[in-house]
Image (cartoon, rainbow, N blue to C red; front, side):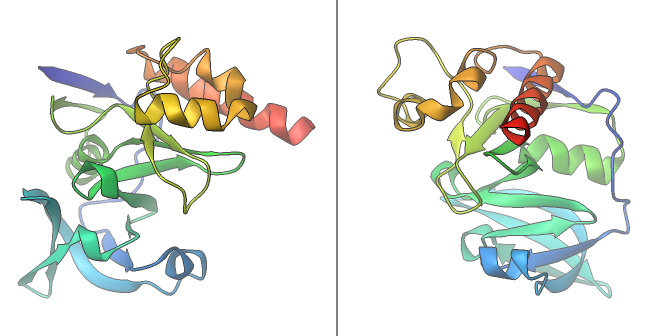
Length: 191
């Protein structure tokens, strides 16, 4: 099954020449002390891992995502989701919680300067959440009564995010999901 990942009115940062900066740890990301390794070429699966392929001065280099907390591609930050074969997810917001979207789709949109792309089943979920930049990343698929999946366990462990659970779920509408996350963050700022 192919899934359409629309970007809508969002500006796509980065260009084909944008540099990739590796963040081996969350601290390297926070302190902006990552390592610039060249231009993005591709992301490819490699068994229980993913390889980030970059080009530095005409030489290709493959970086195992399992060795990273994340990386930046231009102005966009990707965090590595260890529970999905070390695949990157795009960090969309951080604050009261962290919201992410499918890394395959966003890397392709950014690299090829597209407004929307299809990604295949097996290439992750549309969206994800984590409590913070260090906590586990879980699919943002919150079904009523589910307490067994990673999403269900997250929901039980974090009742403070209840307003999100009613508007993030199996919906295909990413614009609605993004607005829900923004509204939630605004609500938290008002408290």
